[in-house]
Image (cartoon, rainbow, N blue to C red; front, side, top):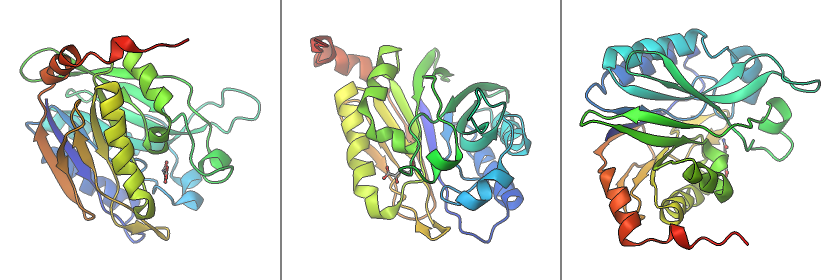
Length: 268
Ligand SMILES: NC(=O)CCC(=O)C(=O)O
């Protein structure tokens, strides 16, 4: 599976429209990949809490439309990172706002959405502004050499909750795609936890972080691709960068057979 992770850098001085056009061009430049991944909340601003309500949009809003067109033009499956999604509140106290990942097919159709389950902020930030997602999502990504690869979706802070990844594994995931806006000061956790998820679940991990500084938060970069043995196949630095790599997804099943840890799980 040919994968491109677009580790996007942004600051406070670029409009959402300009950033969206720039990102769409970056996606178009990834033609020839099977899967392209963008970071969390790159259009709304990962930590730009005061702008979120104004920048919220439905899953078929202007950012989504631009990205659907870019996926179609490039002929790639696009994990478009996440948006602040505005939708119908599910219940009384709900706000009708979520941190929602969007996945588009190479035809430009929206094939999966994932609402971030674990909200970051300890009562403020995400839990203060957004509703929590509840549904697990595994999406089949078609690859050029035939077949589809089951990719489990999660977002940033979710990475700290290993039980989520076990549940994605139990639903057939062989790859975890993790867009993020993870700050530089805790980037060592990002790197370590991504490798831990790969080793413990025997899955490929695709971590696409944000770079640059916005809303007073320096982002950590260090996007990485980790194979199911825990080997780091590609790693970015602190700046904007595209990681492009051909991941041997057949090797995941071979590794699970050669070192069959998962059947030894005991739940009692
Ligand atoms: N956007 C996030 O979820 C940030 C998570 C984070 O900074 C951390 O887990 O540390």
